Image (cartoon, rainbow, N blue to C red; front, side, top):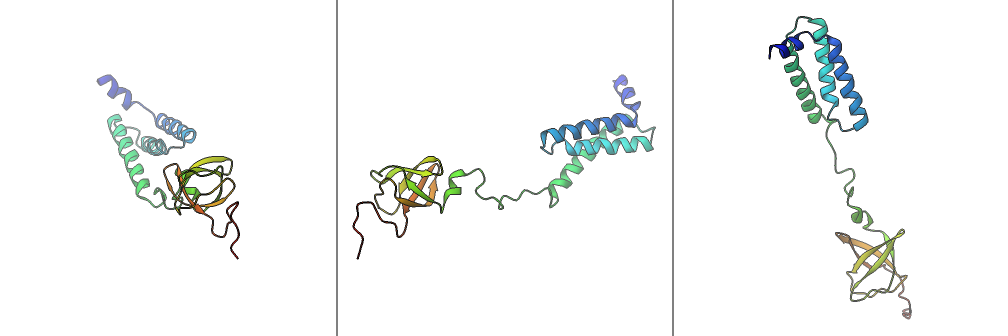
Length: 166
């Protein structure tokens, strides 16, 4: 144990700066913000070690831990560290992004179930207005249930084969 204490007591400031630079470089590669604050903590300990050359190595390690935790806590509590999930309420909920979109029936619906074309993808769909769409009808996505779109016939659209109302 004396060897570890002696080793820590003899570390120059540039060792802490190098550790800080490595941690910040790893942060730049990973972009997770997990290594940024310990990197800054290591640089701060390096500055203290530079101005206080006789500082105990155990105190340096303790200050590194304190600076890292304090910087992380301060960042998470600051307005810049807060994540605002209301900016993109449909993020990672792909089917919810289609609510309100006009889609086409891919095939005739049977018993209220069928498939619709959204862009270049077919999605399972159920009809919520009691209509029986056929292939090519325009539908509006009203809601979702997991990966199933809840659709209704688009207002004003004409079913193929139906006679226009006079």
